Length: 140
Picture 1: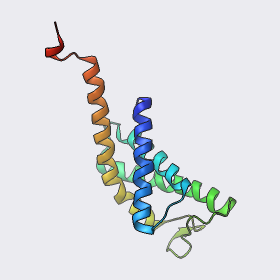
Picture 2 (picture 1 turned 120 degrees about the horizontal axis):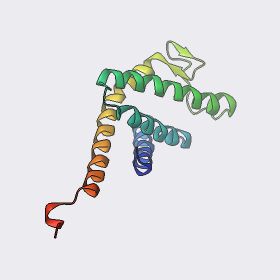
Picture 3 (picture 1 turned 120 degrees about the vertical axis):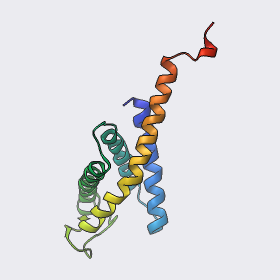
Picture 4 (picture 1 turned 180 degrees about the horizontal axis):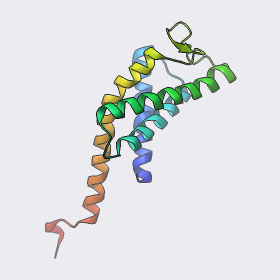
């Protein structure tokens, strides 16, 4: 992936996840914006692999998001005491930072994320192709 593609996917994740949180919870936290950007960038890298099926993509994405969510949650909530979220009341939670219901939600959220990543990958590949191959009308 090119640096411009990584940067674009980061920005898309940054703003998309922030918007989702604001619509669902009414607010977000700056660390969640950064986390959303990092997650979508990694998901786009995962989905750029040719052998990645939808189910594999969703499973890998859910595990990846849950691991990142635990890491960020441990820092934000346990170390810094910022209380960004608390899953203590959710079933099958671990230290109140991750839980099975949200891991299942991440699995489902990976479906539209995969579509977005594939569209971005296709768009950037098309832009690279256009630069590499001259258009017939541009030839002398």
